[in-house]
Length: 271
Image 1: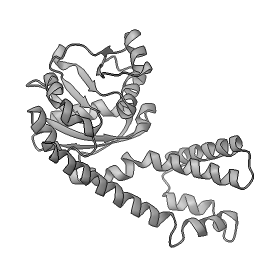
Image 2: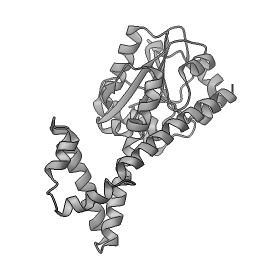
Image 3: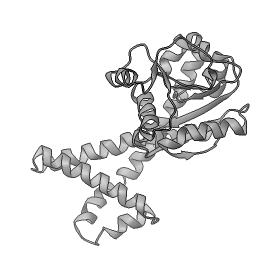
């Protein structure tokens, strides 16, 4: 039935990653995408019949909100046309709390989710916090929606989700920055720029694959490649110093959590 359709509102970086994940898994579902300025990839999916793009609103079975949080207040009334008595809202908007989304869309059936972009290749992490009115069926429905994207962590409280978002939701950006920084450092020491980037990328990919295939704690994996007094130890003495990576990551996660709370307050100000 039409009301059981999966509707994605917003197909930017995060929404597009979700859609690519769904389509790559070939689940047989044909999602609806609502986006006033669709990318070439999205219009290509529509042209090939993989999705339905910008149809007239009808109550959805599951409505996934992937719009920029600062825009939601402006479009909430239009989005509400997709909401019916049986619609489950899955919100992946940073900053918007469950009660805020529920109030704007006139339904209490809201599950808040924070996926990360590796979901596009089935290797993502999706944090899931169901609202107080969500049923077990709602949680399972959201879980099934998210499973093609990778690991689903939850259900958890909304406060836990806010804390974990700075770790796994934003985490891929930290890893990409690591590759950038490694390549830049190699280039600064005299490596060709292309070679430095190629080595940085392959090293990060390989280390992640090793960790994925091993039950060993990351600290043990680190020690296994660190000979006392060797080259790696010399580098780690810098990276793990008093002002090194452990402290920087703590500061970064704290800032991420504070920013999430600021976004929530900003959302309240628009109500």
